[in-house]
Length: 126
Length: 152
Image 1 (cartoon, rainbow over the protein chains, first blue to last red):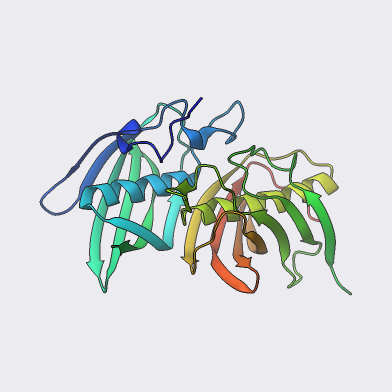
Image 2 (image 1 turned 30 degrees about the vertical axis):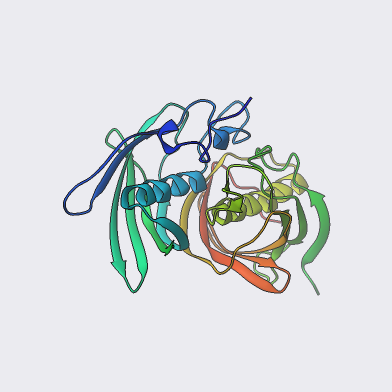
């Protein structure tokens, strides 16, 4: 059985996304029961790995600006709560571009609760 | 006198992670006295499948999970030595994580860990990932434990 993963089309887990005139990206994501990252993490108690959340944030940003972003530096990341299958989360990303580096500042919420926040620095691949 | 205990202990049963989420293979050495400058060492092999493979390449986010699981494995073996149960844990923070070069499936990685601070249920450690002589990634992580194992 083929599981849903980040290799699938992004809309398998990204419900909606928009970018306003200031460049703020707002997205809603929901990882299905059969999302690959849940397999083995953990048996009988699936929780999205923090690393997978960072990957999702990066892919949302890349999809919004149409560039292949490759992270090389992560800082100030805090994980406050877990994400479970079928939980809707909101992702907010601000991107600044300086010295050929895309700097992502993000936070993710579930309702009013902060799930995670932090900064990811990326270079874009041509 | 060295306080570094050389082991070659499979992580199976030390941490709750299972394939394909499981990133680490075995604990190679363990610092017995946490005040010592020696680092605990963990071995991993870059997978050719799993949630961090995208378009045939390992995503840099893999290093976050690799470091977190390495720490959990080292703590797991301490718990086993102390006959303590595996505590619940969660990655709480990542800081100054730098990725220096790409890795490829099959690469053998050595993760070196040094715990820098423990306060209450929080442990902070510095981790370095090497492929051969090259440092491919390094950073600081903070882990929350439901219950820490006892000090030796």
